[in-house]
Amino acid sequence: MNDPTQLGLLRVGSPRRLRRVSAAFALLLGVSLGGALLGGCKKNVLSSKTEDDARLMIPVPICVKRLPRASTPGAVVSLTPEEYWALLLPSYDGGARTIDPTALDCSGRQSLARLSPPETKRLRVDPEKIVLAAGADSMKLVWLESHPLSEGVFEGLMAIMRQKESYMEVYAVGIHRGLPGGTRFTLQRMGPRLVVEAVQETCSGQGGDRRCNSSTSVYLMTTGALRHAANFPIEQVARNPGSDDYGPVEYRFTASAEYRDTSIELTEHLSVTAQGQGETRSSDLQRALRLENGQLLASGESLWTKTQRELGLKPRETSSSPEPQRRRRR
Image (cartoon, rainbow, N blue to C red; front, top):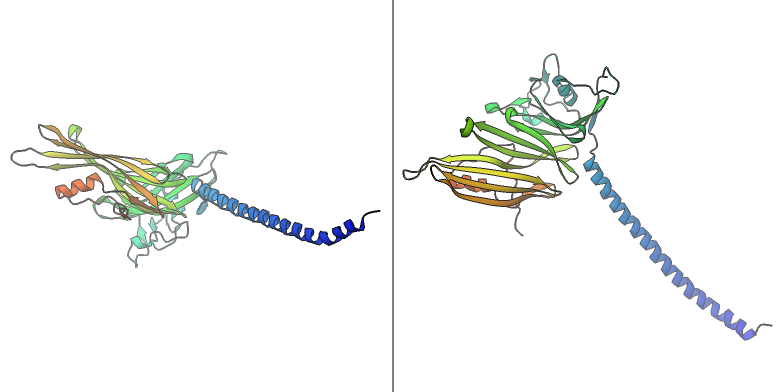
């Protein structure tokens, strides 16, 4: 027979031990649940970031347009310039060759409204005035030159799009201004972000006397829009007539750009040559345009900007926006 003392100890000691076990179990359960919840939040944050990066790598279309069927199954239809105008600007009237600048584009935005006087209802356009540039993954960039400005400069809708077998996807639209004859468009990437690089070049002279000036405008793609974010020179030439003791002096500037995940790294070089003396001096500079809060901020002033100031030259307008603002020192 069991010892009643031991039974009494069990009866008296059990509630205490149960309470201690229950408290310990509750604490352990709370820690486990807390860890699970924190782990779940962390996974959700990581999942959200992964999804955001995926959207940047493979953007979501802001409008989709059906295309005419090709005569051969599986073939991609070759579009005419007029079809691009009609796809991007539904107000395009092919018979009259006009658009309504106040009307919505294919994404439902009034992208062209600010380019014309408020009272303009119909604007005549030339459908042949279009620039097409091919990119990776069957993407292409289209620029419709709808608004002529002075000295051969045009403004108009720019769009990133991709053509499939039976439809066209448009991912982002914006406004570009430039000289159609000397404009080259390239699609770049800054990490997962799609970036449009527009190089504007003007040249004069022949043979050894040929000189070119070129600059780059950068457009960042954000939520279906192409926003101008930076402008920087990549090739510039200026001549100083010199004095009685020295002949003409030529200043030649070149720059190369490397696109990184969160910056554009620029390597700049300036060479100064005097007639009959060759190169008299040269300068090199490394600077960057860093992406901060959706803007590209310059780490320093360009060598060419300093040279223009030294020579008393007026900076030439190369894009719809000036060079990005410099980062403020903290």
